[in-house]
Length: 565
Image 1 (cartoon, rainbow, N blue to C red):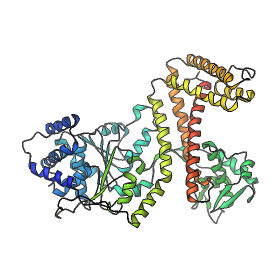
Image 2: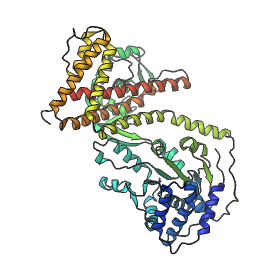
Image 3: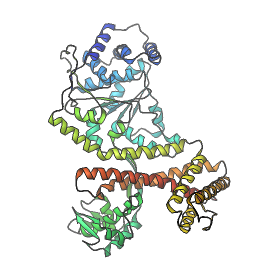
Image 4: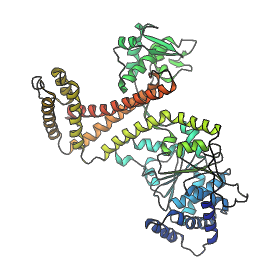
């Protein structure tokens, strides 16, 4: 989509603001409250936007922000209509965004002003008095903002922040152990300065919350095990990476199952092989003061430490992550301004469904009323769209997985009846066990016993599927009632929440590693086949992860020793 000049509606808004002139004797907070009431009663924003911008302009004058020019009103109107504005001057962008925030704050409880530069605090300080004169509370979040102040900041009408602070708080909220630790209230409106830079340039660098974990024992174990593997038979080398063959997997007692735990082990084994066969001491790396030095991938670095029999350092384990473009696309309304929006209009359209409008520079005459014409995509625009499609191909997969797991986790923290979840999940898991293994009574009894200590015998589990299923469900329900009485009504619900959240976090961390590694094990002879198989296998991986969370949560709940709790 090509950028257009300010459309008719924006110029009508400007005319409506100009008609009102100065509002010297007006009680601005009361006038804002009146507009809010009219909107709540069903009046459309198209009717009230000019009035709201006139109030914001008056507040800016009283706060001595500086003169609000017609170009600022037009740019603000562009934002208020859900579009993206192309405007070069940073001063124009700051003023227009602040005016639009005042309008959006009439309907939305959470308006977030986002920048990717050092002026965040300056803009907040500059416009705070303007917001105050309208009866709006504003707040600022910086990297140094303490956790206890963030919840209060998110409750403000207008919040200023840089790109990654909002992303990081989102991730931290979704790995919190208690709802009281969460700070974000909602995702209503995001107004992004340099929106294309945020979504495209910074959008490729995820916000990551990580912790330390030690995999030293497993690293050493794989380092020893892969020494007997032979190149060309058990593994192959391509682009300085080792890849296990089916024979190699079998030699290491692995299979090609698409589960997170299997893929994590396979990745670690291949990193050990890569360290052994693709990186050589004093050529690719050196050892100084008991540490590896050289340009080697992080996982391979730890494998080299195991190979050289030196201390294996703690690994940074991702606890949660999100790409900025994924985070900001989660807002109900996403708008912004940029000096290069016209050039990146196809990308913005693809990422945010945004129409780009070119705003005249300050001092330039505004155009007459025009209606934007839609032009066919040029060759360059089609290429840009394809570039974005390629960028989104895999991140959208992770986005869907993250949404599902975070929703499950949040639902458990908010759950008023954890016992109901445990009971229904137990029934679902044992139904799966029976469907998969009712013909082998010995194996079925073993799997049931690992889950909840069944009192059924092998003889009980011999028979038709429907009969066996009925016995197993009755036994599982009895075991649930018995376990819940053992734990007690006070401990049982909280323990269930803690166990499910803990298992979810651990399995999700492995899932992230496996999903990152998955493209390396997808076998395809063309990009299209690769995409199709990747999506199929990613879906299978996700389904296995969700099932594993259910299965392991039930197993821990029934076998956890709570005497010391």
